[in-house]
Image (cartoon, rainbow, N blue to C red; front, side, top):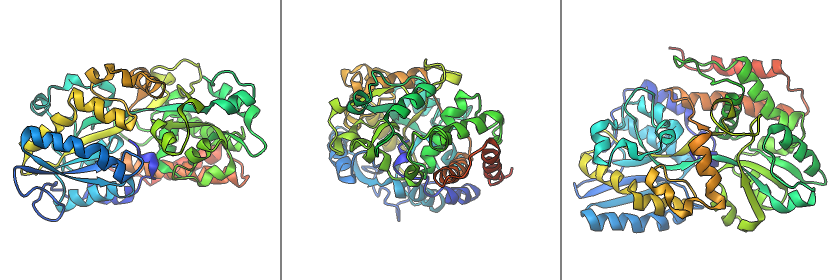
Length: 438
């Protein structure tokens, strides 16, 4: 999900919503649902540089759908800062849209509300079948063993973006493939007001994404097989310490990045203040910031061995946007037709090319648009070396609790306070205590 544009807003509210008896969306009042079988309401997440950009991308496609089906789609593009709270309000009030976008890491948490239409075999058949979708994207659609709560729409992955000129000036000839190489490269670049790597130390979701991947590299999952929090394992502690140590010990992240939460690290990168950034699907954002495509390169995010893959060679979470239908919509048939349209091969090519993301539909990935400098690494990462965040009902609380622990550790590092295995474990133990008890 592109939640790194904002911290995990509303995760505290999520815990309240999950405790409530949710009745879903699709009411004919309040949230803007349809008053006619020939009308649908759609909450789209803000994927472009602005809400207006999204409207320009989406409206022609919605007009095309109306021409084909006679069903008008009323569009509202919802900013990330509002999206989760809007969804939670809809799940508890019953007043929401017919169709909506959700960040894929929220799938299991929203599934637990009971408000979303389950995508069983019959529903998947109405949109062409489950096997049209990439398996890694389906892995972020709800709890394993249950019918998915949503359908993949846009897929994204993390990669290492680097400034070609800053590398050349430092005599660096290729992007680092291992963490040791990244630190070594960073020490050649850092100095005279320039830093090697950007980070968003106060962005809870971004913190989770980074330490989850490092956790996989250290053999940790943060949850046990039965879904219980396991934040203080040796691997989890090592993962969090390694990430914070990029500032605390290795000195390749500027102390000021401890306060970053709203894309400031991308701005620094675009301005030539920082040589590298670990980000998901960033090419479109660089363009809006005035950076030319030949000024940056992209490589797989580092792993200990230098060769990305499964298990401990995982180098990205499966990021992306899913499309969900509120269970109590009074136009299930129209809603599923719209999902079928948006996930058709043709629309997948149009929409994902516009946003710089990767189609989660297999057939659409063969288009040359998804084999460019900006997309080839992301496509390969999603296919071979990305893993889904834990699909557990308490995932949103995990983002808040552990993301905050990492934020506090970055604050310690920025202030010159020691970051030790003991202090990391203490913060993670506190985070685990904040998780809901069963």
